[in-house]
Image 1: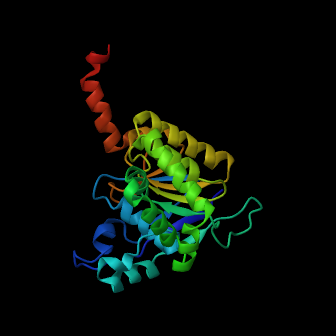
Image 2: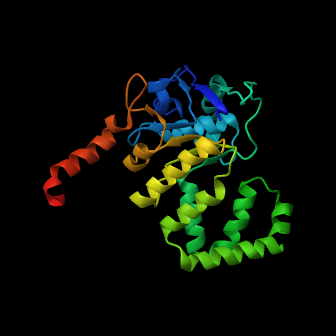
Image 3: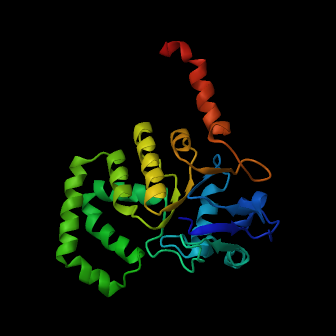
Length: 269
């Protein structure tokens, strides 16, 4: 399912190098990204892939999108969002989609690390669980009521049990298994965080399956060669100018891995 068909970035860019997000996205100002079931935004550090994800998530109003107006120069950030636009896709009957599925989410690498930290630090576990609910939209009174519920106690017990049972990577895998539900759009920032190569391939295979059989759409920022090589995805190379698509094996980061192992090939023979 294609819930989000395309996204057009603002073509108005300030020359001041301190204006956010203009200075990060100036190389792709005015570009239009057309999405498939799985679309990857690839780029090295500083390419703007995470900023671009946040712009998309903010414009779509997805939960957990960072407030761009909190970076200073809020008038420019707001203008950038207002001058960016998007087009939703069509359903299986070729009818225009009017809104995104309610369960659609923006999941950042920080969310995964936060989940790991939450499990590892039992002393702040209760507070972090309440904070998570408030961050997800609960009012103060609703959060207080939730904290006193049996559901909260059960979740607390489960997480405390997981503290001893799971490694960081296993926690990450459990996080995705719990949060990636059928029939939604997911915007994922570096899902490879804390995952071994084997688990990176495993999560990429799950994403392929969710996109093909369970009506999910994914927009993913990554430079992991294991995820890039496993996903059945359209790949935008943010390091290229002008913006263009590429095959995963053409990308610089993947080529670096290839050259490294090629140089040490004799050790594996």
